[in-house]
Image (cartoon, rainbow, N blue to C red):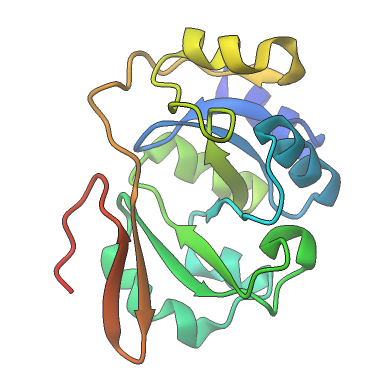
Length: 185
């Protein structure tokens, strides 16, 4: 599938499975409440927001996140580190009733190119809640079949790990999940 087609599908409200810089993820345009709701239905979970990925911090600010909360996070990007920031200033469909959101600028030129054209994407690992993360497109198809609008095959990602998740609060970095990148707190 060509990049232009991926961008067009995302802009039209579709939800797809695509490789990230870590693992396969369900992805849709974050500004589209209906697409985000569909992503969570596919994931079979409520009240646990996924991760916003973007090409720049400005895309997160456009969604309502505070610039001052993103300044320290920029040190980790681009890369496989998701940073939990206060999210209650965004729309509820994004923060799912929580007061925080994980955000990341991936180290993946294809995703950055897509995000430059679509704006930030809402993502969540390609699996049903409680099941192992899909590391191949065939595993993702086994979870979602034709319920997903499109698939982008990025090969076998079993050598990758999910992103590390950190929270920066009062200048202190706390590692919430150790994943692809070591973080010194």
